[in-house]
Structure formats: structure tokens, C-alpha cells
Image 1 (cartoon, rainbow, N blue to C red):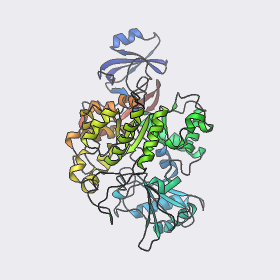
Image 2: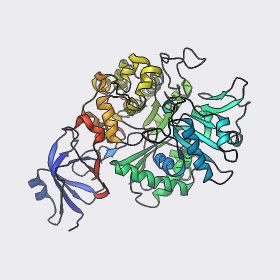
Image 3: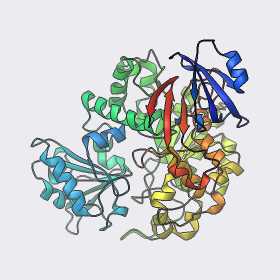
Image 4: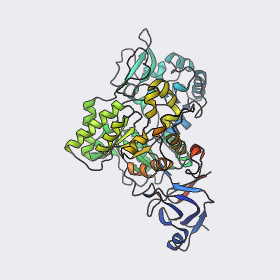
Length: 540
């Protein structure tokens, strides 16, 4: 028997409501949650024609919400680009592996067309560096080649790509960016900072509508298999907005998405739409506006108040750098704040966070908007007093806790040193300060793996097994909330989703084990089923 009315029972159902209630049954009618409580109460409340689904003792929770990512970038990597990731996310352990993957992509690419490599991480490569322009020329001199770093804040171009982009030895370094040169002043192909990379830093680089849909469908399948039903594109420039706008016209895309338009297109985008119409935000909605204040720890461009633990070659002390002038940041924050928009701002370092706090405080001085929920993204290095300041300003935070596993050892030995590394992604401090927070993967910087992400925040164990900051550990409940109801709240969606409560969207997942009873192996817990709007869209 099939019906749009369903009862889920015979399992552990973690609602993530305000009381973190655990219930016996959930009733769903159509796309909405219709009844929650004991099995008798749910049966009594539901239509007489319904299907009962046996959870077989498994655990049901609300579907995961991505608080910060770049959907569908992971689909672009898997379908269109050479994957240069190191294990466990790829096969590249040295530069020869990298060149092999690029050559394979070049061999299947017509002469003159671009070859792009993605997810390259020099900290996981034996040589510990990026490839050079000359090495990429050896791979191919009949293709422009662009290798973008996994951080998204650096890359390397071969000679043909540099020529196409009109970057040469006379090109000056832009604010927040640098073109690297050898001892003779010749460009070696590496560039740091989105201002230096230009269009090559964009998620949509080399993407047309056909390629967009290919990557979109691949990313959708991946996200649903890990229990994520609400994705996010956290840097939606105008070309990407146009591609998403085309998807909106075609109905249900199979996943819900929040788009974060970049600040620079405002106020024109809000005032005149720039040729785009969003009559229906059922599935793809416009969310906060996005700003960028600094770079990445992997490229030593995160902006700090104290220098990096080991100085960059030829630069001591090394504090990283801001990506935006202070006055410009103040103007952009005030502009967006006064327009009524929520603001999400990328701040990796504590100096960058100080700038953002100052800008918000300045905007609030003349326009004391209540419950604005402006959000600091990443917050990898924050001082304890900054969390108190965030609370006072009404700022919420999304922590990049996956960094603890992937690059925590580099923070300990190189970026921050043993002391400061203990407090990266300080979620426990946020709880002490009563700052509501979420956890994210920043996909495709690290892959969309919610259970692994929560394991990182709960255990704070690096890839080499080192524990960083045991006092910053959070509970399993806090981690679950940070990826469900708190993630919904952070983008003003808490009335519609994020918990198993009456009249909310029936986005639900079934796990093969109870996180509370298996807290030591959270990363091993698998999603067995994903239900989106009352329909099963993934089954292991």
C-alpha cells in the first residue's frame, strides 16, 4: 500500500525541538509533518488511509542543513575537473600523481580548451608546494591549465592560461593578492587571493548552463546520500545567479538551496533584479548577502593579530592580510544592514573578525535592527573576549570544524603553534558566551560529510590522532543541533524546518546507529534513508 500519509515508528526519533524530545512516532501527510508523539497519539491523529513504515530500531533525525558551502561545486569537481585531492578524498600523494591526473584530463580535452584541476592541497603533497608554471607547461602547452587550491584562495596557471588572462611580469599585485615570481622577476604561475585570481577564482569559471546542470545533478545525488536536503551556495556571483534562476523556472530541482548573492551587486540586484525574477522561492531561495574579509590558513592569508607560528619565507613576522580595506568593509556592511539584508562574512583570522565586529557595531550605531543574525563564517581563530562581543552585537557564528581533522596538525606545527591551535573553531567558548552557532564543511574545500564534521567538533582529533583543545569539545546534542535546527535558525528557516515538529517540512533521515549511543564513532554512522518533503529520495 502506498499513500501520501505515512507513520514512522519502532525506532529512536530525535526531534531536535526546544526540549530535544525523543518520541515514538512521526506522522507525515504530503510534504509536511502532521503528528508527533506516542504511537497511539500519532495513529489517532492521522488519516485512516496511511502507510506505516518500520524503522527497525534505527534512529530518525531531521535532515541535515548545510550552513555554509558552495553547491554544486563538488559536482563540478567530480564531473568536469581533474580531481587533485589527496587521500582520503583523492589519489594524489605527490606531484607526479598530480601531473598524471592533469594529463589524463588534457588527453580528453580538445586542443586550446581549458584544463582545470581542483582540490589541490600542498600540505598533503610530499613536495609540500604548488606546481610551477613551467611544470604545467610540460603537462600541456596546447591547453590553458589552471590548478586551483583546495582553499579556493590560491592557484597556479601555465603560460597559456597566464597569456589568456593577460597576466604578465608588468601586472601589479592587487589589494589582498599577490603574483609570485622567481629570483629573476619572472612569474612562476602561482597567485594568492581572489583579487589576483580574478575570474579563475569564481565557482562558475568555465561553467555554462549545460555544465552547470551536469554538476548540479551530481552534487544533488551526493548531498542527499549524506542526508543533506538544504544546501547552500555561499558566494553567488551574477553568472551563477543567472544559472540558478534558470533552474527555478523548471520546478522542483530535487534539493532545496539557499543562495548568498555577493555584496557587490547590491543595491541594483534588490532594486531592479538585474534581469532575474524569483517568483517562487519554494526550492531555491535568496538568503544573506556575502562579504569576504581575509583569506585562508592554508595559504597563510588568514588575517591574524599575532603572527603565524613559523614565518613565511622572506616575510617575518607574518600576520596574513586583509582582503578588503577597512573603510570599504564598513561601507558594505552598512549598505547591506540598512537595506535589511542579513550578512554572512568570511573571517578566518581574529584580526578579520575584529574588522567585521567593528563594521557591525558601526552599522548598529545608526540603525539598531533587532535580530539581524549577521553571521561570522569560519571563525577558526577567535579570542575568548571576541565571543562575548559577538553575543553583545547579536552576531552568530558558523565554525569550520572539519579543519581540526584535515589541517589541525598543520595548525599545531606551523600556522598557529601548540598553544593557539588548541582553540581553533572554539565552539565551547561560543556556548559559554551564549552565541548560537553552526558547523560547516565549506564544500568542496572539505567534502559534505555531516557525521564526520560532527565527530570533529565532538572529539577534536586531527588526522594524526592529536587532540586539539579538549576543553573546546561539544556534546553530541550540540553537534546535532548545529547541523539541524540551529542551522535552520541561522538563515531564518527555523519555522519551516530543522526539527521534527508539527507543520514543518518533512525532511527526515534514518541513521544506522544512534549518535548518543555511539558517540565514539560518529564518523562511522551512515545515512540509510533520506526523506525530502515526505518522499524517500535516497536509500542505501
